[in-house]
Length: 151
Image (cartoon, rainbow, N blue to C red; front, side, top):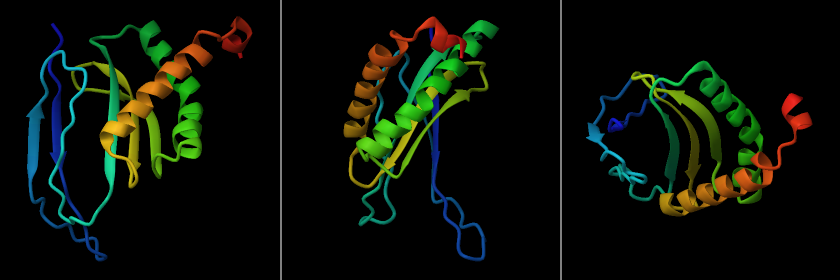
C-alpha cells in the first residue's frame, strides 16, 4: 500500500536587511493515499498578487534499484530542455518552468515539473503539463532510436 505524502507549507519574507520575518503560519497536510491530483490553496497576504504555482510530481515508488534510478535520471535529461522550451518559451505559461528529480526521506523518488505563473491558474497549468507529458511520451520517448539512446 503506498504511503501518503506529507505536504509542508510555509511562507516567509525578508526585508532588505535580510532580517527574517517570523512565519505567519506553517501547515502540514497529509494527502489522501492513492490520490492522483490534489490542489492546495494557501492564503495570500497580498490580495492583488496574481501569481500561482504548480508542482506536478510523478512519484515512482519505494526503494528504486540502481537501474530504475538511472532510468529516472535519463528520463529527466531527455525531458528537461523540451519541457522548458514548450512550457516556458512556446506556451509562455510562466516565468519559472523547472524540472528535476526529487528524493524523499523514505527513499521514494519522483520527477517533478514546477511552474510559477502570473497568467494561468494551477488547474490550467496542470492540464498543460499533462498534455506536454503525453506529447513528449509519444513524440520523443517512443520514437527514441538506439543510436540516439547511445549518444
